[in-house]
Length: 263
Ligand code: 1HE
Image (cartoon, rainbow, N blue to C red; front, side):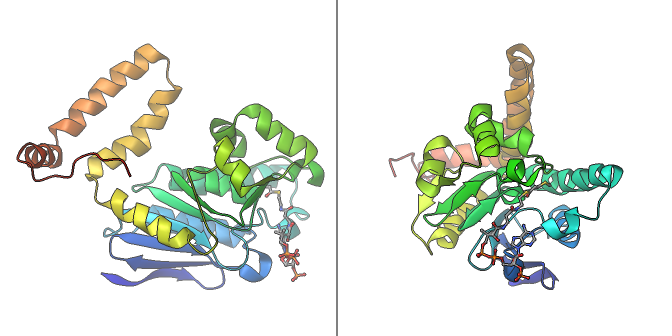
């Protein structure tokens, strides 16, 4: 099935291509800066993924992936409103990280502030060479509020994140790949094709395996090893007891499934 699934004109576009839902930040005139309606649209889109979707590709229209928080809204918020606002980002980005399907982000141009926070909520990040990463919150007199302090140190380490925030240091795409911001680095213009290739592979996995990777793996990684190993045993038994696992293993043993090869 192919078709347009949900659109929020001037904010977000979603289009189903087979099993992959392509969601685009669609505010290029403002460099995809995230305002309140865009956060709400993201949240709505990720909690209402169409049943056919088995993976999501998330990208940004225009020259940049995302310029972060829409700074024009910031001036109007008092402290209680700012807390509620930050929590609305958490809810939306949690829906990305802990949703039903894996999310692959395609990064190009500016990936800054809240743009890096949304990218960090995805499961796989593909960078084009034009991508660069910054956390200008320190220089803007603010702090991350979209989950960045919880997610970004888990990718690149607390010291690197502190450096980016304190000094305004910007990492280019090569550095980002080296330090762990992204898992894939491709030439300019090749990001979407790479993301779709990965998404189609991911979409072909057994849904319960993908669920375990999205929901069990990051939680187990945060547990003390004893508790983690116990939860791993449960998740592993549940996954391997699923009929999808049994038929895939039967196929391998019958010589009908792909071997693991060097890519
Ligand atoms: C914006 C925003 C924005 C662009 N909020 N309006 N984020 C930042 O500190 C990044 C601020 N933006 C930039 O540094 C640059 O805009 C870019 C490097 C991303 C792109 O530069 P460029 O030359 O391509 O575009 P531009 O001319 O700067 O911007 C085009 C328009 O987008 C312009 O509006 P116009 O009406 O004059 O055309 C800009 O004002 C507008 N624009 N970025 C509002 N961010 C939950 S906490 C998260 C905390 C953060 O994210 S802090 C980081 C904020």
